[in-house]
Image (cartoon, rainbow, N blue to C red; front, side, top):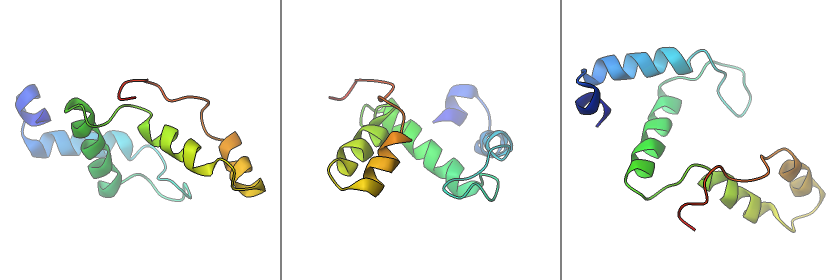
Length: 91
């Protein structure tokens, strides 16, 4: 999809994304650079968002909902999540 839109080969798109995201640490331990698995996840989420099946912040919204009412550890995790999703689309 991106290759066609940007008139570049899929390999060029992939290499550019891998180069960009490898400068960031991979969750959850932040003990290695982001790699192919993270790039693949990002591309899947992006495609879903473009198709209207996913909105930016959907994961945050779902995790916030799932953690509510599960005790001290869950409350501590909630405190470290962003306050709100970035988009209200899809509600």
